[in-house]
Amino acid sequence: MTARLTGRTALVTGAGSGIGRAIADRFVDEGARVVYADRDTAAAVAAAAASAAGEHAVSLTMDIADEASVEAGYAALAARGATPDVVVANAGVQLFGHDAKVADVSLETWSRTLAVNLTGTFLTVKHAVRAMLPAGGGSIIATGSPTGLNGEGADFAAYSSTKGGIHALVRATAMAYARDGIRVNTVVPGYTETSLVSSISGDPASRAAIVSRIPLGRPGTPDDVTGIMVYLASDESAYATGAEFRVDGGMTTL
Picture 1 (cartoon, rainbow, N blue to C red):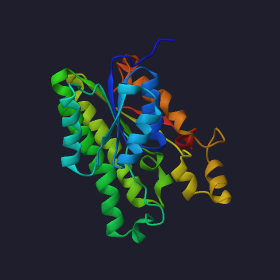
Picture 2: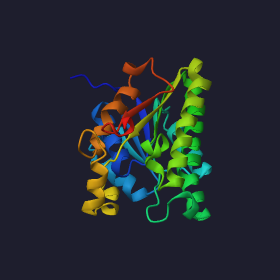
Picture 3: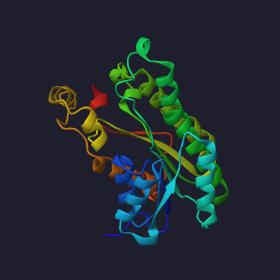
């Protein structure tokens, strides 16, 4: 089977673990040169090394909430003679135990969630666009959430607000740069069992309550998300921009 991303360079944020790492690994398998970007240097290095792709997988320390760090990351890529054909703005935080209904959210929790999820995605997308414009285009993919689309986020006011903002940012950016050959879309995973999520929501009753609301009857895995990411990173999605692709087991249809 022909690799679908051969010759492309992709940058994936939050690639040190979870969904981001699964996306980066799948891109490598599909023939792309992949930059594993993460705030956690050790995690990024380990993930890139474990991909066994040699020079086709490199690590990059990037704190998406810090514009200087984001700029430096793209500059490092340019210094290697590479322009990103694909950027996946995946990194984010959900401050379990602190995020809550709006009346109970502290300003600290709100500000930190906003800085990473919405401002961080904005900075990732902003500098992706700047890198792609001279090259004639590319594909930008942001990770959204059902909490930004429906009432699932009632107990996570900060997180759901930032994800809703990401959906709006994607639509605005898609419309602004469509004629420049830059496509921008959102992938919306549902309840996905990463090691972090499992450690936080490990209570069987809580997990069962969440799964009971998923029409397909099971939680998602990071690998469930990678197929649509490859589609959006490839020419197969050449006519798709400004769209939301839901990979949530049907949660947002309820």
